[in-house]
Image (cartoon, rainbow, N blue to C red; front, side):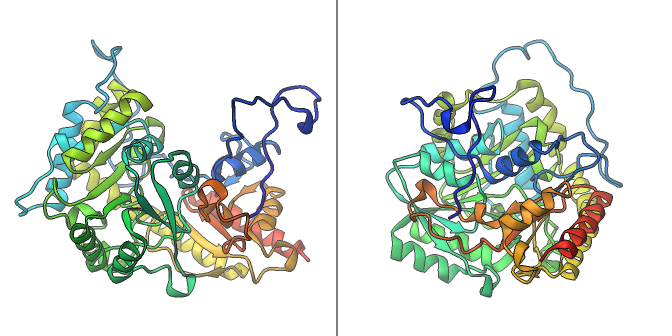
Amino acid sequence: MTQFPRAKTGTGPQAASEAPTFQAFREVPRTGVIFVTTEAQRRGYSPSSNDWCNLGQGMPEAEALPGAPPRISELPVLEGDHEYAPVAGLWELREAIASYYNDLFRRGMSSKYSAENVAISGGGRSALTRVAASLGNINLGHFLPDYTAYEELLGVFRLFSPIPILLEPERGYAFSGADLRREILGRGLAAILASNPSNPTGKVIGGRDLAEWVAVGRELDCALIFDEFYSHYIWRPDLVANGAIETAARYVEDVDRDPVVILDGLTKNWRYPGWRVTWTVAPKKVIEGCVSAGSFLDGGGSRPLQRKAIELLAPTAAMAETKAIHSVFGKKRGKLLNGLRDLGFEIDLPPEGTFYVWASAKNLPPSISDGMSFFRAALDKNVITVPGEFFDVDPGKRRGGRTSRFRRHLRFSFGPALPRLELALERFREVIASAT
């Protein structure tokens, strides 16, 4: 894989090669989004700049949407809020999250989630880290491509062995229950980690396929760890007709015996990324381990933010927000998807979920026909994207620096407002017109 430039350390005119090193510390790589944002900042980018189009950041526009509940703009701090919150989270919020899943996805089922099936974390990476720290000496399957932050997360914990599973563009990144069974049995997997919907491809495992996944995990005792942070951004018509939210919680039979772990939060689906309020939903025994890990990893989240989050979990409020997301983001999806196609990008799979378009630049002029080259050319026009090779997750760089299968790809976000997407497409057209 490409060796990405490293951030300079130290200050002043000292050359990067002369920067101090310390034997106690390793070089910690930056995730894809941090890399591209840092490169943009060197060229003058700031989040408040009106002259930049940030199609690299995994963040939805946070403004009020037509039909959505009013945005929360004030946060009361009550007596006791200056104390630590419980590592597992406020009990009232844990109850509200359990009720949210039961009311929307588990009506008529005898097994219900309770507060003891929920743990609160201070951000998605914190939730993922707690789960990873709770795993034993096992083989854990992960997919290629997938979320960039998985790479370092899967490499830093030494108890489990990360096993890559290739998804094929030619198959639309599909992976059936039969495929899952074969991988579990053939590679001796005790757990699978997957973003669903997938970041970056937008592929959704849903409906009958997701039910089959859960059944296979149950039968073979393979833990299925689902990163569901984009589960309200669903574009597949059959899944939209089923309620516009897809989650493995629909298909769990026994909440304390089925080895299904769900990660979600306010970050994307409620469009409050700055709150850093996320959760893990799982069998009680798994939650106990995650909470123990949280006691030494992060210590828990913010008490006032957790308390305020309770009102956002009311099913009527959550569904109103989701309906508004579908209306606004659906239009943005169409604009970016069609605009990239018109410019000559090849789309392996129109996004079935998320707010990303995963596209190949291979048919563009030679000088910009790979992800990193197009990324740098777009930076010259004040547009940020993410090269696809960052999603070729390789914990510990064990694959020996081989050229990425996804070096031609880029991830484009339609999280920003529609006028910003339109401006970015205009600038892409200028990049392509001037390329050789």
